[in-house]
Amino acid sequence: MEITLEMLKEKAPELLEQIKKTGADAERSRIQEVLEVAIPGHEKVIEKLAFDGVTTGPQAAMVILKAEKLTRETLLKNHDADAPPALKQPTPADDGKIPENLKGEDRWKAEFEKSAKLQEEFGTADIYIGAMKADLARGNR
Image (cartoon, rainbow, N blue to C red; front, side, top):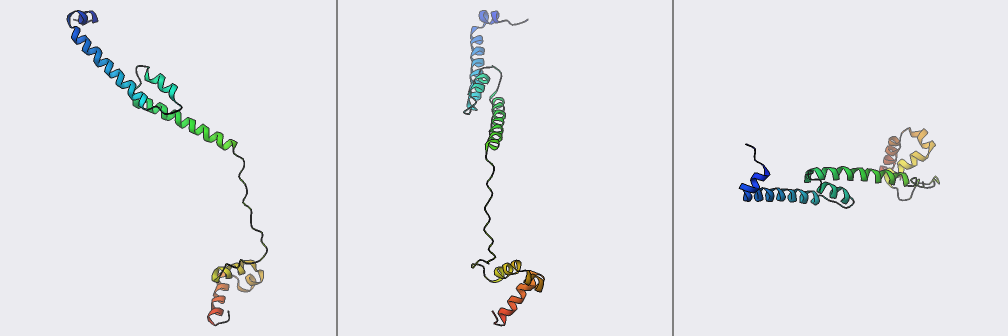
């Protein structure tokens, strides 16, 4: 035997009210779950999903997450397209002088790198630095 709505109304009105209340509570809970995942900028989508009668909170969250990802990708792409070209860093003028703040091995390396004569005489910076250390040890520097 099939139970119909009319039968419930007539023979079990309390059961029918309990079924209605359970259904209403479940729908209200579903709508609240959907509304809880709302974030600014996606109000229209949430409104549609909340009252479509089928979308759950987690499903709505995925829709919003995908929409937000697309929005951010688009904003980044537009930002990059609108940005002016990067400025080139100015390079200090090379006046051939070795900065006064360089001392010891750093200074000797800079001297070696700037001097073709030292490069020809010593071959490598390490050999030149070794010679400078030896001069220093002998008290010649």
